[in-house]
Length: 118
Image 1 (spheres, one colour):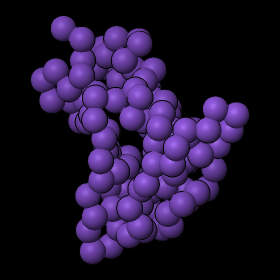
Image 2: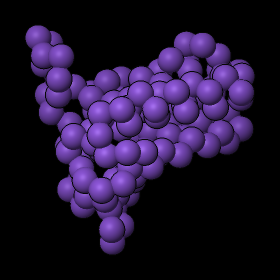
Image 3: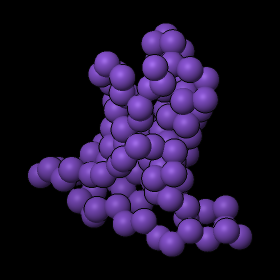
Image 4: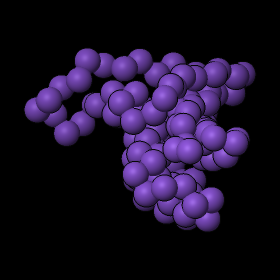
């Protein structure tokens, strides 16, 4: 993904296409696409370097992973009801089963996991 604003739109399109192909139900698909947008936006605004998006389906789960070349770990801020910005991780926490991060020598992966309805 490019290190600029269009990256979030490209990531949403990528995620929606993959999830439709996997026949993920619309409500779950919307949550995953929203989380994709939030994590990529955070990577572009707060990280630096290349941004990568990986989606994997494992049985009854979908795992979203977003890479950026910044070693600072994500820290959720308290939700601000009147703000349209700064609530990305709060949103990811609300729509996913769980989320977290893994650091590496050259950056970090931020991930979110979603249960698929049976």
